[in-house]
Image (cartoon, rainbow over the protein chains, first blue to last red):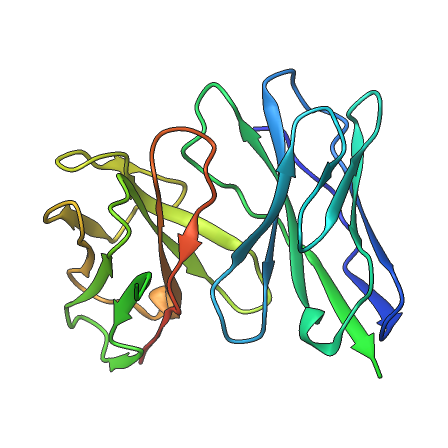
Length: 111
Length: 113
């Protein structure tokens, strides 16, 4: 399975944007890029996913590099409730049942 | 809708004891999953069930068994608990075999002494 690399932690100030990078240099053509986040003492929750084009939803935006070897999750205005561990996950579109979680990026939001 | 529910929330076992973790979903999802999460780590897949009546091994299946009782329920059994199985266990469900998002339960925190 293709792997992802994320920074261990990032800090942001409240109401400022947060850009979370993810490297996936061995991504294959059928791999989708998924982002989940895990708030303290909770199960993970879906954030966003994409294949080639940039994606937006109510929670975040996903910017995917043209060569697909990296992507960036963008939280437009961080709130204290966005403090969580964010996981970047590649999921094979041909056999899409399983998620393989890495270590994720712990985001700290300062008031 | 309650979503994905797990029981119990907390459990302490002695080495060698057995127990079953229960998971149920009310979203009519076909696929269900069991993960474990050790401190400071990401989740690892133990077993999954793509549909009622089928189960498959994930990344770390040793020491566990599962039962897909019906479409709603997917249980995880530890036959002889070991301290290495101390972890937080998450159940998840997904609508079908495609790329839908997975919905996770609140977790069961298990300690094996």
